[in-house]
Image 1 (cartoon, rainbow over the protein chains, first blue to last red):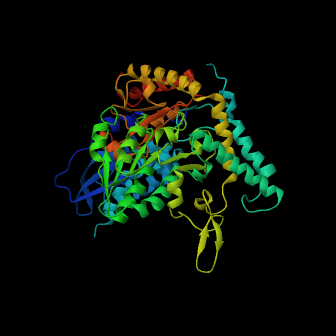
Image 2: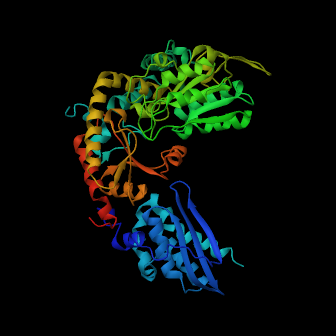
Image 3: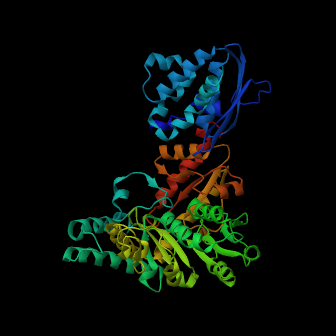
Length: 142
Length: 404
């Protein structure tokens, strides 16, 4: 069955043992992201060094998809330039909409574990919560 | 009971899923679908207005449906039965028409913490617009209402007491008759949300002494888009119309109008006659099966599900420990697994349940559960479907990465 395998090891591992789910007291940016209809609620925390995302973390509650996706995202964007992080976010959104190429999906590394969300419309907003919040957080920057 | 009734439901024959979301909407038997089709094929005309035989036939079919609803809830008169779209519209009718014209600043409206948002938001609106205070009857941990606490909350300023007959989360039957007696003692009216009780119990508005009772056709095996408001005749007579326009008038001049008699005063615009006819067929169907038989099957399935759930570690049921006190509603949480993930995994096993706050956010906040999962049964469900639910639940945590 299609989503018997959907909750794969990558997703459950990031949900149960998130690397970046903790406070970040010296964060430069803190932004809340919410899915009001299902109650996913995260605070994304970023520390910038010029144009580079020097560190990042999140706290909050939500389903496995929202939590794992945010954790995977942070693993990918820490150490990257803001532009690069936003570009990955854009590919991620296109992957979720079923519009990204195989090469683009490969470039998302672990985040590609969420590609099947494209077939689960009710869960799309869970998967994109972290990335959507990241986009808002970085675009608000001068 | 091997499934004498299962084959009456075409969707259940075609679908391989275990449909356990009956509290959200039930399935419809073939006779309901046929009744709606038959109306359109042989009786369709605009009811209540046309003077030709087809319109008369449509009017008769529509008014026969009203009489069937009257008998279903044991109202004194069919003038007390207003057709609406659903429970939400029925409750809004009471709030906008009765509420806004009877509640004043300083008055109180009392609701229970268990209300579906449809029996809460209209009263929030009434209180906001009038300056009245909204007060809450809180339930005990097992979902019961303590009548002593309710009594203490009802004051001479209380004008409306609104309470669900059966909670859509806990499945418990509330003591409406006793609460109505307390409300009437101070001259308040009793508004009852019957959306979850009408599919499971024989509801008698006179025995409950309800002033208003709302329910939805689609939860009692009828069509979507048809609902009912029962209202006590003298109250309805004194209330202003909710919606105005066609079909609810006697005469209209440039400046004013004389409204139609009950029940038409509250049914503005072309009515949903076809779905009323479908609801009539559903009520007849429920009568043929009988609430006693439905109850036996629902309790037997609920007992099987509760016993199974109790043996699965980390799964917790809300509400009563007694299968008789659930109206087929089993709301639960699983340690470490978000309800949306529970529902997703069950869905992948072909089991349809609901996850979230079930339009009862204040109750969830009060019980300190951000969200829950809910399986809700009907008499046409089977032991096999319950076992599929239990099998899926028993492997759930493992599939979410927890060790055995």
